[in-house]
Image (cartoon, rainbow over all chains, first blue to last red; front, top):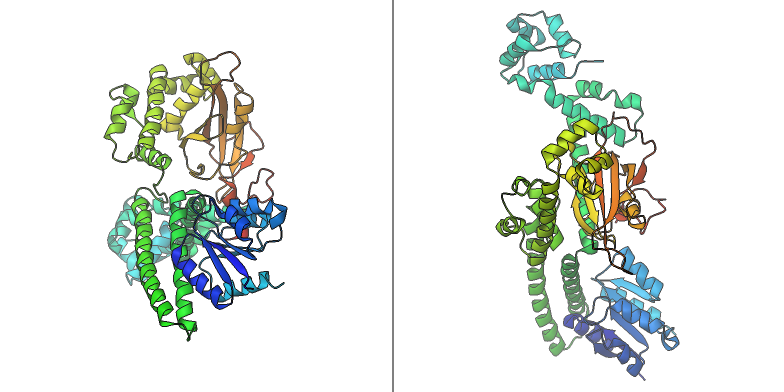
Length: 122
Length: 433
C-alpha cells in the first residue's frame, strides 16, 4: 500500500511540482490549499507525512502545527514545513511547536526528497 | 598642538599646481622657510597672506580655510571614539589629517558611509520583520521562485517525463516567470516610491505617512501656533497624508498642538526658561498647566532640539519626534528600558534621568517623563493614561548632576548590548543576518 502525504500549500504550481515528484517516488499525494480546514483533513486522511506551508489562507501553518501537536494522536506525525519565512524567529517558533523539519523556499527538489525520505525512514 | 590643516591644504594645492615651495613663496613675497612652516601647520595663517596664496594657487580662499578641516577632524575624532581608541590617539586626529589629508578624507568618508549603512540596515530589518505588505511581497516572490526552481529542475533532470506532464510544466513555467517579473517589478516600485520621501525611510503605513508629514514640516507649525489655520484645514492641504487613518492621527496631534499653543506660547515659554531654567515642574506651575503640556511645548521649541515621544496605556506609541542620536523604531517595539514606560505604573510621578543610547556615537540625553490621566474620572473605571517623554541632547562637555546614565538601545534587533536584562530577541548585530 502506498504511503500517504498531505500537502497543505496554496501555490498551485508548487503543488503540481511536488505532487509529480512524490508520485514518482511512489507516494499517494493529497493536497489542501487552505489552512482553515487542514487539521480536519489530517484527522480524516491520517497521512504518513504532512507537508505544510507557513503562510496559508484561513489559518497559518504554525497554528496548524501547534493544534496538531497538542493532540497525542499526532505527536509522532512527521511534519515538514516549507516556508518563505526564513527568519530566525519563525524557525525558532516552529521548532518550539514541534516541527520535524523546517525548509525555506526556494528549495531544491533534491532537498525535499531527501527530507521526505529521512522523515519517513521507518 | 598644531593649528589646523590650512597648511596641509596649501601644500596639497601647490603640488597639484606643479609649483615648488620657493616659486610660490617668491610669488607671494615671503621666504621659502616661512612657507615651509605654514605648509607644515606650524604657523597660523589668515587675512591678506591667505588671500594672496589662494590667488597664486588659483583657488578660492575658503578651499584652504579651516571650516572643512574642522568638520573632517571632528569626524575623525568621532570615528576614533567609536572604535574606542585611547584618548591620546583620539587627540592626534588633527595631526593625522595634516600628514595624510587624502587618507583622512577616505577614513572619514568610510565612517560616514558605515553610519548611513547602519541606518539602512536598521530600517530594512525593521521593515522586513514588521511591514505586512513587504512580508507578503517577499513571500510571493519566494513562492514563485520555489515553483520555478522545482518545475525547471524536473524538466532538466527527468528524461522520461511524459509529453503531457512536460507540456503542463512548460505552461506552469511560463505563468510563473511572468508572475515573478510582475511581482518583482511591483516590489521595486513599492520600495522606489518610498525611498525618495526621506533618507532611509519608506512610506507604507498610516504611521509612516504621519511621520513623513511631521518631518516634512520639521515638526514646526507656525500657523497652528498662531491660530491662523485649523488642524483640519492643514491636514486637508497635505498631499502626503493619503490614508484616512493617517489624516485622523495627524489631525489629533495638530489639535492637541493648537490647544497647547493656546495655553503656553513658545515665546513666553522661552522667556520663562531664561528666568527659571529648564525645569518642567516649575514651568508647569508658572503656566498653571500639566507637566505633560510643558513637555510637549518644550518638544516644539526649536532651540532645544529635543525629541518627544508619547504613548498610551498599552505602551503603543502615539507620537514620535526624533532628535540626533535618538530615534524610535517605526514598526518594532522600542527599548523596554525607556523612562517613558516607567510612568505608566506610577501615574503622576515625574522622572528625570540621563540616558545613553547604544550606537556608534553613544550620545547622552537628559530625559523627563510623566504619565497623566487623559480621560474624565468616573467611579470604578481606571482613567486612560498617556505617558510623555522629552529627550534633551546633552553636549559632550555639559556637566549634569545626573551621574550614571541608563543605558538604552533603539530596539532589541539592532541593539549591541547583548546581556541586557530587557532583551526580547537576539540582535542581528551580534548574530548576523
